[in-house]
Image 1 (tube, helix red, strand yellow):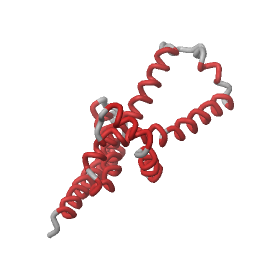
Image 2: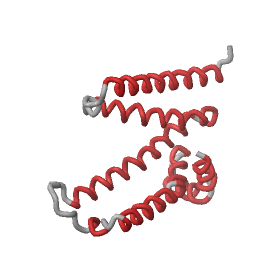
Image 3: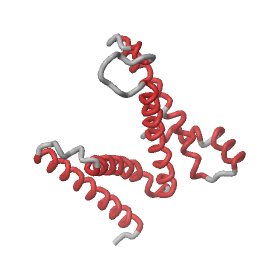
Image 4: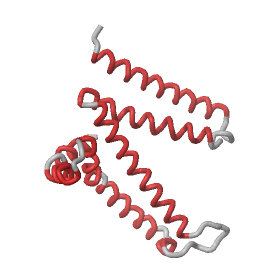
Length: 169
């Protein structure tokens, strides 16, 4: 989180000023410039680690041709899914920034928590819709349901705390 704040302040100067001047965009788009810088370190780290693992496991050749087996998926499909996954991953930060700006500076502290809670809630709800939890034990499903209920309560408490901050008793 500190990295994003630092990147936002840096991006708030030259790159953002140029972007907003040329394209006449408002402050809602300014934070997205910061993610290009803040996420580049994660990209480089993941890229290096992926190639290190592929070399260690002698699977570098599978980047050009899949190993023979029962898989019906082609390499093109795998690359398409990887690009789609990366786009969705970056998209979460894009939409997080939109919400962060809309919340304003008074509620900036709660935007990251709400973002993370929504990621967990929506991914688990999608898993329920796709019946991924169907084969799990009842205790696992109950634990997941309890965790999701706690997250829902956390959102309510954050919203109520923000309300109290704005309207003291």
